[in-house]
Image (cartoon, rainbow, N blue to C red; front, side, top):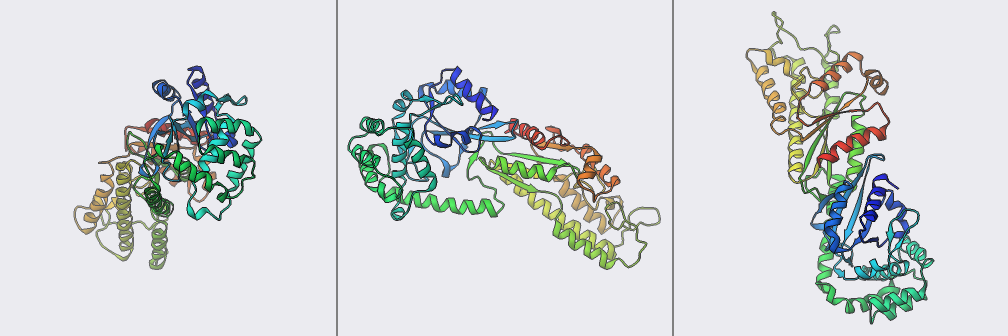
Length: 490
């Protein structure tokens, strides 16, 4: 069990909050370890006390987007630093269930379930009575059925859950609950108790009876529910494709009421920057809308530029800098040359392409942040440390020229990088690592260039909200520290 979840459960019990984990108790251990959601039913009159407990335990409320909104359900997300993971709890005030994507039935059976709850000895969490849970599972499965499900078999998960509950309840107990909560549909429940349920068509007679009996608990009829469900299903498929294959800037899942956030992750080579960004995207993206934006160079453009340099390099004594790039020619007094030679032309075209790419990606990051998303950037344009390293302008040396086309191009490029300070990131996290360890992680870089990049990261001043994290420690510990900083600002 995650430490933060254990604290949450213990606090609920100490404050005498009336609750129960009302469904999917078959894989309760996975939920308590943050791998699946917690579905907890609460006594609505205790809502103010519950919100106090949620705040004490560090859980934050997230606003579900249109496609994820259900009646009487609130979404709260917690953070566990020790495991560097987030977890999600659905707060139910009544039983909301029904067809997939709609859950159009709101049943006032919360008081009955809470009065019959039982305690799980291993974890201390209160769970629903197995007899009640088995009855509700049959009802939930029946109301989810669609016409195209007639020839289908139940999923292996549903069969496993049915068998798990069957071992823990009695037919008489389930029948008693059915008689208490239902009238005409109770006889269909009792009929199913003596069957081995494997096919969906075994539940259709129960579905028809439930729709008639529970019609007072829904605002949708058969036709309207079909139209709404089909539309939402189509939208979810489209949004799922966009989220997986396209850089999106619009929310599809859950948003923080405090708004979006741009987090810039900075670090020298070997500091674990890309690994950290990838982990943050995976972990935060499980439950909330999160997008990553790479604001460094472009690998394909860099390959083209390197091939170009090899092609035009005729003289062997062309001086190079620590990056392996040809040093721009200088005039008699030592200033960069204004001559637009073949060597300079390739560098200028490459620099312009990189600047335009950064500007486009920055606009994507701003738009996503303004739409409420968590935006994590790998690198960020800066002008605090010039010289063509750590995402500074590549043509800054030409700014020393008094006039000429090269100075004008360099000034234009500098302006794009400088605009990143007008709308800076909300949070900057600098990953620090000893140079010896960085060299072990990235053996291709030279010590001189590495030291320059480390100094550049230290010199960058993008935001007042700047934090440093030592990534020489264990990965989970460093991930946990980075996530904790972000979590406090969400």
